[in-house]
View 1 (cartoon, rainbow, N blue to C red):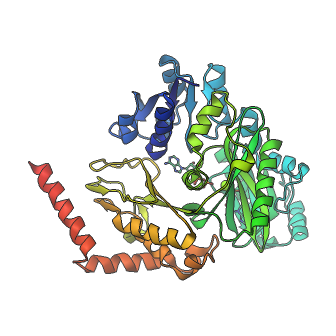
View 2 (cartoon, helix red, strand yellow; view 1 turned 30 degrees about the vertical axis):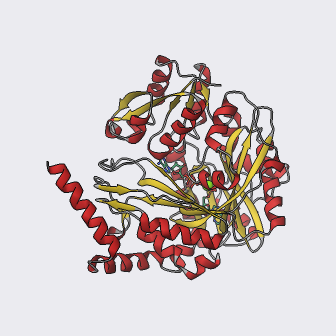
View 3 (cartoon, rainbow, N blue to C red; view 1 turned 120 degrees about the horizontal axis):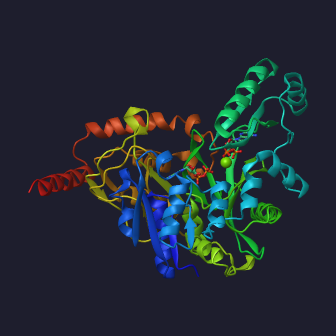
Length: 481
Ligand code: ADP
Ligand code: ADP
Ligand code: MG
C-alpha cells in the first residue's frame, strides 16, 4: 500500500480522498492556493504546501510546482480528484517519469479517451453502440453538407479534443453549416490546439445515463451499475440518482456489459465512467470520463463499495476485491449538488462568507462538504459547496428523505441553490421519473425557483426562518465579543 499521497485538488473532493487515506493509514499532503489557506481540506491534511496565487492557472494547474512538492515531501502517489489535472495525460506521464504513482488510469487509456474520434473508432470496432456519424475529421464545406444530409439534419458538430461541453454545436440545415464548421474548428484550435471536428446525429432531449467502472491492473474490470444525471443546466449536472427510472433490468445488465467492454477495449484500470445518451429505448455510448466523478457517492451508498479506497488500493498494485456477481445494489440514492449561487441574480456564483452552516443528519443522510461555518468562499473556483447524498429503501421514500434533509440544511450568509432542489423534489414529472436533459428548461424550473425565493423573502416568520435568524443573531453577537 502507498504510504504517502499528495492530493492535487481542493474543496470537497480533496477532503473525500483524505478520508479514504486516513482509513487506510496513508498520510496526506495538501497543496493549496493563497485563496484556500483557511480551507477545510488544508486543515484536514497531515502536511500542507502553498503553491501560488488564487487563479487555478497559477496554482492547481501548475504541474511543475505540484511535482516539486511531491518530490520534496517524498509522496509515493498523486491523486488528482476531478477537474484540474484529472484527465491530463501529460501530467500523468510526468508523475510516472518522476517515480510517482498517478492514482488513476494508464496514460494510454487517458490519451485514447481524450480523442473523441479515436475512441469512437476503437469502440465501433469492439461492437459498442455509438451515435451514428463519421469518425474522420472534416474541414471541407461541401463534403460536410453531403455527410449531414446522409445522416439527416439536425446534426452535431463536435471537436475531437473537446471536453466540458466546449466545441459542441448543433446544426439545423445546410445554410448554417459553413459558418458553424469554421467557427467550431477555430474554437477547437484555440482551446485544445487541435482543429479536428467530426459529425454525428443530433439526439433530441436524451436522458444522460452513465456507468461506474472499476478495474485493477490485471485487467479485471467490473461495473457498479448506473447513475442517471439528466437534471442539468447548461450541460452541468445538478441532481443525480440511481437506479435510473428509464431502464428495464434487462437493459440495465446489457448496458453494464457494454460499459465493461469499453473499459476492456481501452485496457483501463482504476475508476472511470462510461457516459451514454438514452432515447426511446435506445442507448448510445458517448465517452468515458477517466476519473472519479462528482456523483460517485450515490454508487457508493447503494453498492457499499468505497470507490476512493478502491482507487488507492488499485494504484498500490492490489487486486480488486470484488467480482461482478458481488455487486448487488440496494435501495435508491439521490445526490443534490449544493452550489453557492444567487437565484435572484441570474443564478450566478455568490462567493462570500458563510456565517451559518449546519448540515442535516439522521438516517440515510451523507454530506460530502468542503466548507465550514466562518469560511469565506474564494471567487476563483467552482461554486459547489457540498453534496447532499440520500439513501432510502425506494425512490418514493428517498425523495421524502431528501426533502426532509433539505429542510434541515442551514446555510446563512451565502445565497445557494437549496430552493432549486426543493422545487425539483416537489415537481410532478420528477416525482414520476419522467424527465430528460431538457427538464429544467421545458418546465421553466428556474422561473419557479425565482418566484419561490421572492415569496419566501416576503414571509417573515416560518419556523425554519425564525430558527435560522436566531442562529445568525447568535453568531453575530458571539463574534462581536
Ligand atoms: P461531467 O464532466 O460528466 O459533467 P462531473 O459533473 O463529474 O462530470 O464533473 C464536471 C467537471 O466540472 C469536472 O470534470 C471538472 O472539470 C469540473 N468541476 C466540477 N466541480 C469541480 C471542483 N469542485 N473543482 C474543480 N473542477 C470541478
Ligand atoms: P464533453 O467531453 O464536452 O463532456 P460529450 O460528448 O460528453 O462531450 O457531450 C456533452 C453533452 O452534449 C452530452 O452530455 C449531451 O448532453 C450533449 N451531446 C453530445 N453529443 C450529442 C448528440 N449527438 N446529440 C445530442 N446531444 C449531444
Ligand atoms: Mg461528457
